[in-house]
Image 1 (tube, rainbow over the protein chains, first blue to last red):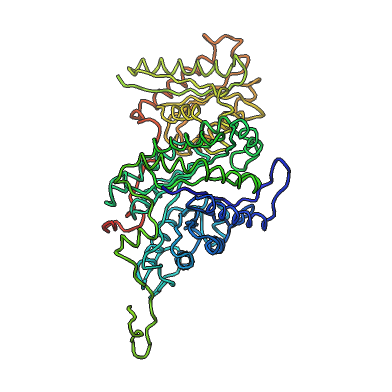
Image 2 (image 1 turned 90 degrees about the vertical axis):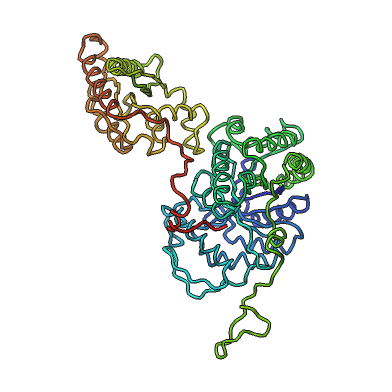
Length: 380
Length: 211
């Protein structure tokens, strides 16, 4: 099972000091968090993508490329890549490039984006969110699998004899997750392709996650990719820990009370009851997280949101120490002991290459336009 | 004998509340009317006051806490709805509106609804027509023609044989008519139900799935 962190990349005032970090500080903090994630033995760092203040990560592959160069093992991912407003051609190119630079340490999570005004900035309309996600992803899926694509659709200019370069590393496209809180259509999409499904599982009652995962599993089996319990499931989670649970509650409360999204609403106690948020000791986090399995089944990836609501970097890094040293080693052991042998791990570049029968160079060489011949030894 | 469920929503804030009193009388009259027509009736009365914090939390977080979820399911899954509000500042009160704001906007389509209101003076009575009825028109509910307003004089004149009692009976009969015309509901809609399949969404109805 993979464990990691995902970040929204919000610039938020620290309510205990009244200080708001600069964009520069926040960007550097995100990188520091990613490096720390590798240091403490986590598997995945995933960044959000946003194109409006107060968020900084508008250019995920730039950030992930930089992190790739400074890490050895860490898997780089997104939470989420906007499949609606991005051009699927540019996603295919950018993430294939990142895949090469990181030697295969990359996967992506597709999401739609829920901020209406962002869509028109990219020539799109939020009311077409689902159809955009469906059409764009179908094109992206082809661009990574077919060397030459002829394509015509509703939302982008047609393509004729288009080759997206670079071709995926070793001939194997990055693994894709689809994220959605409550759109059954997206669970259906993930199931159709045999891709992963990620339930963000924060800020919402567990019943939403439970229903979406059950639907995804059922449809995954329906489309013949394996049995329902072999579908590839990821969950989010939100925790704040101190050794003593009272200290965790006391320290986190002002951040909770003033947080974007849910602040000034329910109490911390109500929210921890109604959603998977856990504020307490490492042991409480372990117990709660193990409980997720009881309502979604054995799953493959657990990401935690650790750095929102204006928490200072120093605190976040302390949280990552606790996560990496006290929580994740126990979770790894416990989850592994519970998982039946026929339930797969999350796909990685290595496992996908093995499943494809080995690595193959998929370079598309230009054809001489006079002789019509490709360079010696090249395949086309 | 048909099973019918009737949800009664009262947005009265004081306790005891004249809004709740009117809601109870409308509920009793509608139940009697349905029973007279050989239906078995399950009444669910909701005092929104008890869920006021939950309603605000729902507006802020986007989801209903468990207790409110149950109420929402009861109201959206009922065969008929009686909705009663006190009139504040020439319209429904904020609690009443907030409750209907957090419902899925499709959840009361074609649902028979009886609207009622109370106020400090009969001069507020048309608030039912210029505020409450249009809100349900937006939700595409079927609001019965008789809306029932109770002013202080309606209570002081005695409800047993007063004009108010007559309006209650007429409105209840209209609501029973509308309920009877429809098959019993299957309960609240499931927001997670898949109503299409992928090839339809992709516009390729004939293709075989890829693996």
